[in-house]
Length: 363
Ligand SMILES: NC(=O)c1ccc[n+]([C@@H]2O[C@H](COP(=O)([O-])OP(=O)(O)OC[C@H]3O[C@@H](n4cnc5c(N)ncnc54)[C@H](O)[C@@H]3O)[C@@H](O)[C@H]2O)c1
Ligand SMILES: [Zn+2]
Ligand SMILES: [Zn+2]
Image (cartoon, rainbow, N blue to C red; front, side, top):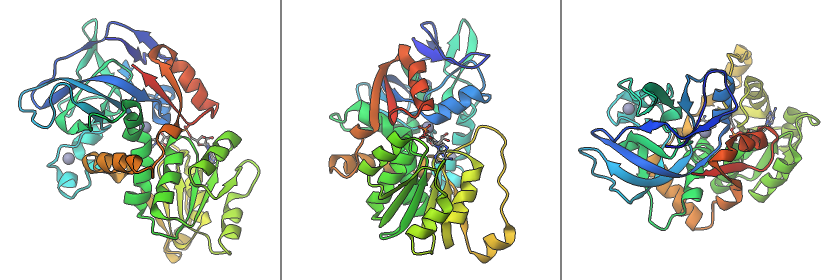
């Protein structure tokens, strides 16, 4: 198949046409990818030590071509969304309902199935699959739990952006933080993930949605998705502004949707006593966050992590599609560019330049 490959030496990606993809094994599904979005996590892996060679891409949707023995929930021809991390359904975390941090799913982050194998190879050598999917290639093989069946009339480009950005951003608000009606919210970083946090905050009924991003185009876009106040962090004091905009109290919730430990510190300072900061962005390096233990404890502040919106995709994807159908979630508006696989590196250039919101590839 054709695929964009990250080889040793890093970016840019190289589009090749000789990646081999295995037939689905027992309990597995093979999907012909229609669309795959570009996420900053792919860019981070390209620049900071992904295992190679690897087919990245984890925000994808397509059509089932064939299924392995024992697969019952989908059949060839079904439209599906590819869930980035396929949960096992029976580990300690899955039985608690915390499927986003399933033990097997975490192994998927290493580009392999839980048994150590991968369905991809090239010239007899192993090729890894990025974040449990590998959507920058024409076919994906994944576990049955890694596909969510879609209604036949669901457009697959719109579905694709749910896979990572929307599920993560909206889920961070509704599942991780559980933002309540009337709450005040700060969102730092306004790419696909941050814009989805803004949309989630609007869905939750937040009274004030303060956003921050150095790119003016993205701050303007956020207003269309429900942001009430916009800050340029290179110019404004984000912490002071959040206190000013909330009568000196501080925001109820802060989200780092950019990915730098400094921003978790900004979130902790911008939130009120008892407030919640959610880390959604992921930094590539080994940066650390230092917090004052005493003020953290005495302020009763909360600092939460978030993997793919703390969601079970089998519940989350249908409800996000339903919200989109009801006109309450704008997915088309998030897709700022559609490109063929050959233009994948130009798509990442746009991401680095803060151009548009989300680029979606057509495979
Ligand atoms: N936790 C998860 O499950 C999960 C899932 C998807 C993505 N991510 C991470 O979320 C982050 C965002 O992803 P994306 O695809 O939307 O990225 P993106 O590159 O499209 O957007 C990031 C935005 O953050 C802005 N930014 C950078 N520094 C900032 C600062 N100091 N203050 C405010 N804004 C700042 C950038 O200008 C950019 O607009 C990345 O770190 C990505 O790896 C995490
Ligand atoms: Zn992602
Ligand atoms: Zn599990």
